[in-house]
Image (cartoon, rainbow, N blue to C red):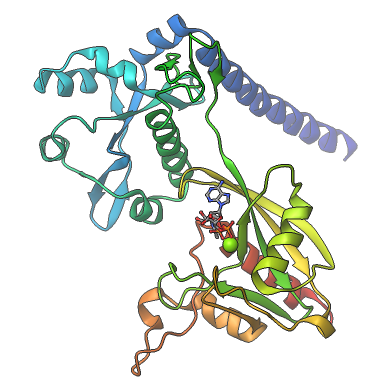
Length: 341
Ligand SMILES: NC(=O)c1ccc[n+]([C@@H]2O[C@H](COP(=O)([O-])OP(=O)(O)OC[C@H]3O[C@@H](n4cnc5c(N)ncnc54)[C@H](O)[C@@H]3O)[C@@H](O)[C@H]2O)c1
Ligand SMILES: [Mg+2]
């Protein structure tokens, strides 16, 4: 029995070791591509390419499903030749990852070329990122979000903010340098906290005026300079709904591309049930209120389309599963239902 157990353990360890070494080798390879321009230039000739047009990703629809096609370097060459554009264009691409077999993946924005011609040539369409993220397979949405964010960062960091001189990018697109000042710029994300506040038996959700009708989400806010996550959670909850957080704990994080690259840091927080009266900040929020478990469970089942009532009002629904707010709400439901009555 012990021998069988040991053999199984050895097999599991060796599998872990293989998995681990594949991952480590992949991360080291990507790092080399970022540091070594000539290696990265060479990688562009054997890589695959995700296309964008003015920051909208290219998707193909097969039946009811949307796919994010990867074009080979040869296909890219053919398209660019058709537009009488040189392969120099490929140098505008940015490195966004690689396969386990070390095939590098790049993203390229063809915004200067005629959109409809590329679309009919490649049989697909450039789709607004807000729509694209919610229709593609779950594993593809983080990739689209980070690729678009990196392309957007390059687009808006062409000049040094100290000298006003143009900045030059490395081949991978992992940084830009101003040769006049010597400043190196790296792609940035803004840290944002998102907090699901609970008073023990209810959770607090709010609506910003820009939200689609009927949608409620957890409270969120950008971290101020010098703040830690705990301080931002305390401040945002106080600012937006006038409550004092008693305790908080970290749940998970997510890169979010809107409005331009946020690192969403998701937390749960509690307030005392005796001090749970909301005083909403009307400059930021349109509505904020407590939801009981039953209402949350019903809301999670509701589609945005089925939220509208005959009298024109909207039943509450919550962000879709791609958004970390959804995860926080589901975690809260689990906590509530696993608690002894
Ligand atoms: N993925 C999710 O589940 C999820 C859920 C909620 C919010 N979010 C994202 O979180 C972000 C922030 O949420 P919020 O709107 O409640 O923030 P917020 O409460 O801090 O209010 C936004 C305001 O903060 C100011 N601000 C301060 N620092 C800023 C910065 N670095 N960039 C832009 N504005 C800054 C601006 O005046 C802006 O209008 C939003 O962009 C939203 O897309 C994501
Ligand atoms: Mg906010």
